Image (cartoon, rainbow, N blue to C red; front, side, top):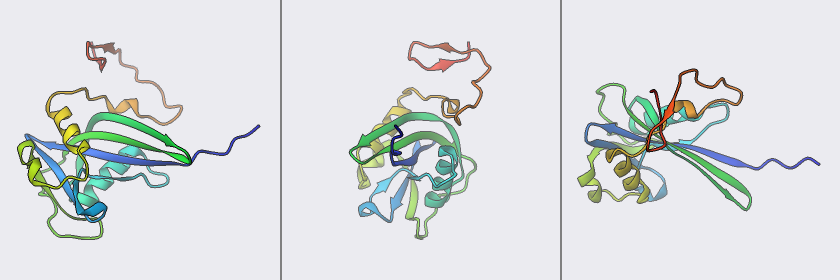
Amino acid sequence: MSRDPIPTWCFALVVVRLGERWLLVHERKHGQGWYLPAGRVEPGETFVDAAVRETREEAGIDVVLDGIVRIEHSPNGDGARMRIVFVGHPADDRPPKQVPDDESLGAAWVSFDELDRYPLRGEEVREWIAHVAGGGPIYPLHVLAHEGAPLPRDRFTTSGSGILRNP
């Protein structure tokens, strides 16, 4: 017996670090709070492509992704939401955009101590930034792959934190 597909909405979020500063986006939606660069993965797009695109569109920054903080899957009664939280750094020294457009009202580099001055959309922003700043586990990008992609050929060992590292 075949089953109906489960509608799943996929999102990419990026914690972007520049030294001791963090990239925040002043959102046009969601009450115009401040959040991480984030958005829905478009049809045919990978999570990685969406993370890079959303950061460019919302913050005016080209980003290099360094790893994955978390993969979230939240089923509900009529579907599911999947989010991948990446960590990255700017590809160059271009400043964040300051002119509002359809994607955002602007963006800014903010220190952890300055977060209280910004009305954040959610406390998860502070939690993810604290996690990265505190040296929390960051998983390699290769844990996210297309179905059927070959496994990495490098030998990896598990560190005490559970993160895979080259020996």
